[in-house]
Length: 231
Image (cartoon, rainbow, N blue to C red; front, side, top):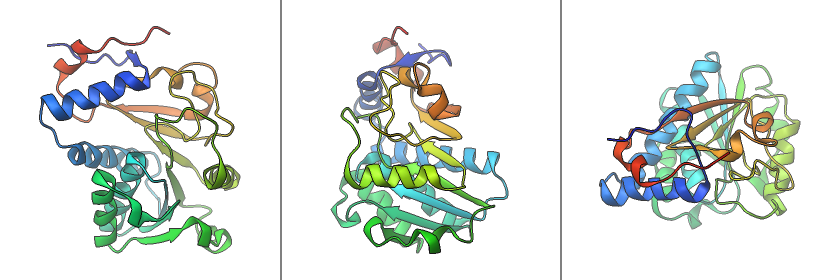
C-alpha cells in the first residue's frame, strides 16, 4: 500500500484525482471529507491561537467555502463568537457546500453578506483575540482575482488579525506559486490530501506561512495511482 509522503507535492489536477479516488473508488462521501477538512482547520487554529474569542470566516461560493462553513459551525458549537462573511448569495450554494452552509445555519452562526458588511463594526472588538479563516477561493483558480473577491482579499490583508487559509490562500496559484493579481497573506495554511507544488515555490512560502498538512484520512493506496509533481 502506497502512503503519501510528507515531502510529496502535487499539481491541483492531481489532488482533484486523489479526491475523486477517495470518493468514487473508496466510497468516502464528499461531505465527510469536507467535515474532516473543517475539523483540521479548526483544530490547527485553536492549537496556534488557543485564546481565540472571535472567528471570522470569509466564504466564497464553492467547496472551499464549505470548509469555512464547517469551521464556523464547529466554532459556534464550542461557544466561540463566530461570523461568516459570505461573498455571493449563500442560497446559491449546492452540493456539499450547501450541506456545510446548512450546518452553520443550524448552529445559528451569524452570516453577513459581503456587500452589506460594516467592517468597522465587525472587527472593532476582535483586534487582539480574533482569527480570520480564508475560505474564499480554492485550487481551481487560474485567472486573476477580480471583483468582490479582489476587494475582500485586500480587506483581509489590511486587518490586524492573523489568518488561517483553508487548503490554499485565496489568490495563490497552486501549481506555479505565483500570485494571481492579489492573494491572502496567511500566517498558517492547512492543506488537504496532497501538498500543492505552488505552496513551496515562488511566492508560495511567503503567502502560505506555516504549512500544516492533513490527509483527511483517505486510504494510503490512492497515492499509488497519482504521480507527484516534479519541483
